[in-house]
Image (cartoon, rainbow, N blue to C red; front, top):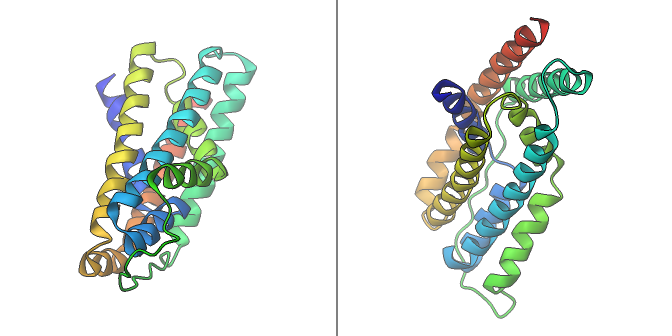
Length: 206
């Protein structure tokens, strides 16, 4: 059980290191309006991730190993992870542009508006739904308490990482250093995802 939790937590954290739409929305808001406003975006993104996890958990709770739907989910998740891993391995690195901070203006979103922006942005990103459905396929035959622990952990990890990104966005030096290593992080994440897809395929064949 501990090994399975570490696999899920590790793969999820590596995926967090690869910039996506949520990352750039958080960075832009933090640079333009400060990390407190960006924390609303972070909370909205975490809430959306929690909803995706709950849907994945609810869907997989009725799937039992050995059934056709379970096998289809296994191979579907395997294929998605392999596709995403190959894309990341071949990626030259998503460009991260760091702009000079600007004073917040009258049009700056309030915290509730920022929360709504983060929630909508994450919900409209299909990668979130697909990645959680694939990741939680690994937990389909595990005890309910382990699935709950992994769900809570991933939501907390998303919120913690996004808040850290928002705080760091106020320091351009930190963001420039991060930007120099984006390519390596994406390729490392891709390699891990490919290895996980291979493991899922071997398990499905058995």
